[in-house]
Length: 94
Image 1: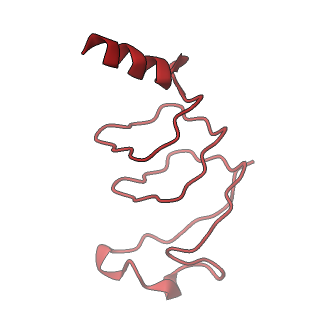
Image 2: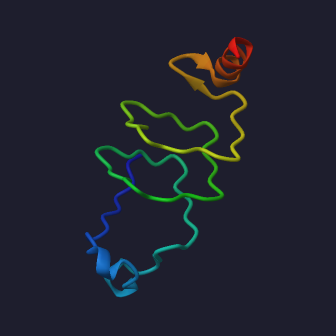
Image 3: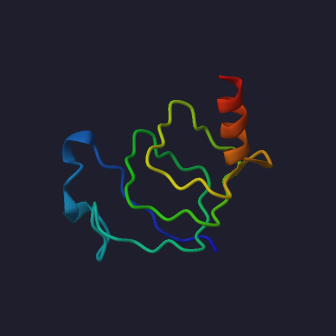
């Protein structure tokens, strides 16, 4: 399902102007985007906290300069390889 949600482009100086957002949305509110599909989306320099990505799939993603901290990576795969196996191999090399 594609979620039909188009937010207006907000200039950096007006990031907190809630009057530009569609009714019912807020800049930092809770949202359930379960089963939504996103294409051609830029989240550059976005910040996320308390996010559930269980079962999510990413394709053609630029994760350059991304930092992940305090994450549950159990079952996570990158190109079919378990991240836990990647970390195990990395630590075995040290």
